[in-house]
Image 1 (tube, one colour):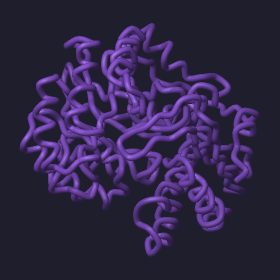
Image 2 (cartoon, helix red, strand yellow):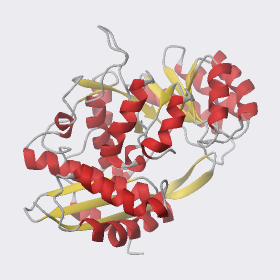
Image 3 (cartoon, rainbow, N blue to C red):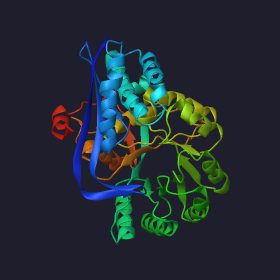
Image 4 (cartoon, one colour):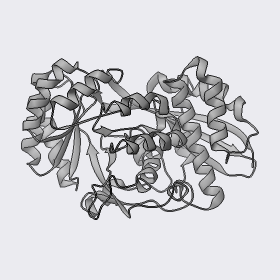
Length: 387
């Protein structure tokens, strides 16, 4: 089997309402899908992390830089392909957009392998450690409105009503405002729902410590990306100063980027982003590093239904840490804010929200060869960006 072509599909549409996080507000949705074709008619799908104009830049890297390197190669030679591309790009970017682009291609190769062998990807990764996966609802994004605390309260209460037993909200406006918003959500959902907060690296460690102590009093389970991903010492200081979990890692790339972060015990919960760090081939190495240091992994998930499905397979094949009769199960992150690329992209939807409601916060593991989905090509054509 040979690779005959790679095509990027950058999909885009305007949102009805502005959404934001600590770094910016945005008014449109973007997703970057990668389609790898073979001479045997098997097509694989992947996704590259990075929205907006980043997706347009990554499209050029995928089609004009990576594609010529691997045309004619056997798509089952995933390690060979990964190292060839990385070695040729090393002098031009060991992190960031080149690795995001490689991620989407690598993920598509795993889809091809599963389809060629007639196996779900989680079996290629070693098998299923569980038959169902708990899901946490990601919502409560920042908006420039006067009633944000009330909106957060209403949205979080609706997530509980929808079956979620864990959820994550955005913070990062100011310590005082963050405490107000978190208190509003905690009052709305009660004491028994697991609550996480995400500052998207808005603070320094010195600012975060007193804020973290206040959040601990509100029963926050983890504080995600409190400081910049480059600030390893800041992360370590927070792990030592605070009792709640410090989470992060979505902005890191490859085993070499994660190596010091993990070895220095900078994190309590590691959040690798498979669509950005180098794909599934590299994710497996990062996972091995994390588990070698007994650091639990809860994958970062952001993007379309493709990214969600990929992570369902990774979580299905994720070993219990440290293991036991009643292990803590890794959760699937699920964005509950409006996103057509999550709900309408596939010929048969994943139906995450319906499953969560029916199964009290859990979903079933995926079935079928590869990632087990079919992309709606008419939908892709309709929302593809020509720019």
